[in-house]
View 1 (cartoon, rainbow, N blue to C red):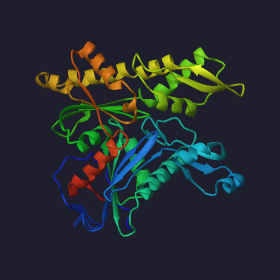
View 2 (cartoon, rainbow, N blue to C red):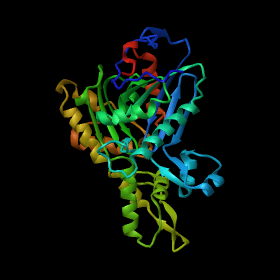
View 3 (cartoon, rainbow, N blue to C red):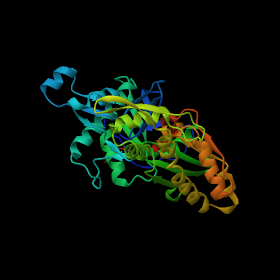
View 4 (cartoon, one colour):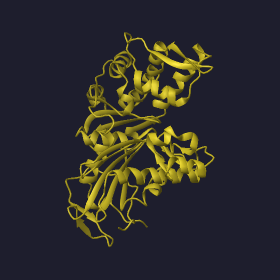
Length: 373
């Protein structure tokens, strides 16, 4: 298999083309041994949807045994996903994406650029392996990235993927969600991940720079707010970031009438029950004003004749969309600030991005799959 084709070009919507380039640039029929992949490379979780029917998601964690004792205990050289998370004290542990982009980029604070790049490349290789490509197949992948990812972030992702695929293309994550659902006209997409919340305005053409926004008021932001709130109210409670994340994912709720939430946290080694109902509600609510700020910008800079249509078609996607009551909270904030709003939650938040990226891969015209220079 030749690993020598890639492009960072933003894809366009095309017809159901059946051609892709070969080594010499001539098109080849897509039935001739090509596996198409849609990848949602996330800060917290990475999902893949493949044209052979495989769909897999793993947490975006990579671990390498620290020493010979750890290697003997773990029985392998690399751990991925929840297994890496569970054994992180025995490993050099990596969560290679921060705010939706690789930590190995030049403007990101990190002490181990090379380690994060290797972890990202190994993570991509593992998720592609789980898609079960045949040895005689070319692998063509579309990878979702944050809506406003800078060019050096895109280059880092392409570099991490190039050893595992024959051709790779990047697209904005909210665009891939909309494309997968065939909602390409008069719709606003909110894709809430762990590192970023991405917003995209769709109006029947490829979204341009002015149609997309990214902010960092997302899952990790909620985790940090929840940790601060619990520490302030219960200073004796002991917890880790991962414990807070698990509490949020299990109990996240914005509703005024949410059921009480009691969790056990250690106090000097003794499990102790704490009421964290208000802390969870308020922490989850903290991202709503920032999302509506983004929606207001995208609506307010759009053609006035069509602004009402956008308000009434807001699509909520990503892992963060599973917060109970979030859709209604956004609607209420929109009605108060913008006069109207209707929010729809997608049915498959985990695979919304990867499903759309796979559909883009199938539909992509041949000229967008370019040979590496």
